[in-house]
Every structure is written in structure tokens, then in C-alpha cells.
Length: 172
Image 1 (tube, rainbow, N blue to C red):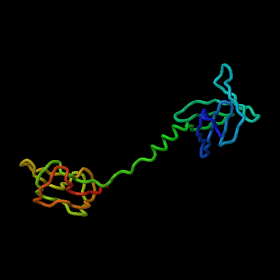
Image 2: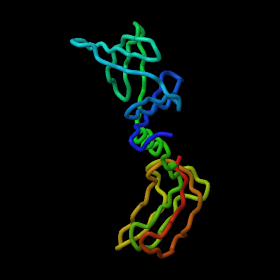
Image 3: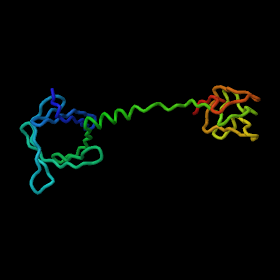
């Protein structure tokens, strides 16, 4: 059991992942206590790691989200996240799926003059879909992306209100 003042980190070295908990007087790695102490050698960037009866010399420098560690002449890239950062990254990875169904809606009240497509019709960006008359002007409504017409909801001669669904489209 860890105290409330403990700091939890998640470290990854290659495919190996470890949970590291740092408390005031102890260090736990994957729940197991580890005897370790690290100190900087005076006048040097080199650090001395004492761990479980061994002394190891290392250099460590921050790089991006992790560290580059030179330990006994070998280089290791270690990614380290605290508990909060890891939680935020996991939440961000669960993005909402992209909505591919799109309704073509009337931009204003008007009268449908022509419907240029049918159900199942493949359209490209810029293709004419519906022509409607509003304020004595014909307005050609075009596809804003490639897709397939799922259904046609209006017919020529029909009066529509603003935001009325004219067509249902599935974008590619």
C-alpha cells in the first residue's frame, strides 16, 4: 500500500514497462521495494546509482517525453510519464469516431426547383445536388465532399423551411 504523498510514474524501456512509486523513504518498482540511491558526482554531469548492493555510473539527459541514459557505456531511451500525464494521454486516445453521414439542409426557406441526384448516386465534391428558389433567385446546392446519396427527402415543387433536410449523404 502506498501513501497519498507517493508519486507514481510509468516507465518504458523498449517493450518493458514498469510502474515506479516514489515515496519519502522508499522506492517501489512494480510493487516491490528497491534499495536505491542516486547522487551527482561533484563537478561532473555523471551520476552514481547505488542499487541493491551495486554502484553504477550513469549520465541522464531529458529528451522529449523521456530520458536518454548512458549506463556503463550503453545508451537507453526511457519514456517516463507521471500518473496524471498518462491518464490525460489515455483519455485523448479515445477520440470520437468521425461522423460520415451528413444531411444537406436548406440554407433558407424556399421552393425546390430540381433534384439533380437519386438514392445510391455517387457524388464528387462540387457536384450539383439540389436547386432551390429563394427570394426569386435559383440557388444551386453542391456536395462539399465525395460520397453517396442515402436518401432524397424532397421533390420538385415542394416548399421547404430553413434547415429542412433535403438529402442524406454518406461521405467517403
